[in-house]
Amino acid sequence: MKFKVLAALFLFALLMGPGPGAMLIDGTAENPAIWFGIPALYLWTLLWFAVMAGCVVTAAQTIWKNDAE
Image 1 (tube, helix red, strand yellow):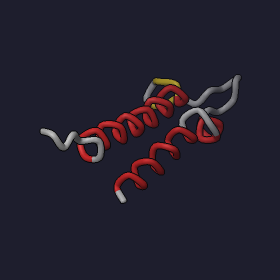
Image 2 (cartoon, helix red, strand yellow; image 1 turned 90 degrees about the vertical axis):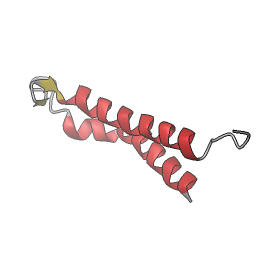
Image 3 (cartoon, one colour; image 1 turned 135 degrees about the horizontal axis):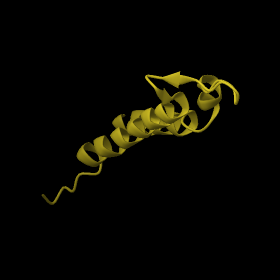
């Protein structure tokens, strides 16, 4: 069950990072969106990278554990 949730979350983050989610928040070329003084596209991508990294770390700590330990 945990594998399916992590896989679905990872695939969703993989889609939303550079995909349609970026088109939703970026603004226009003439007037790009800025969040907290940083371009929104950069923060958006960083957020989804953190979600993907969290999925990998969680899987490494729970699913991919070596039973020989």
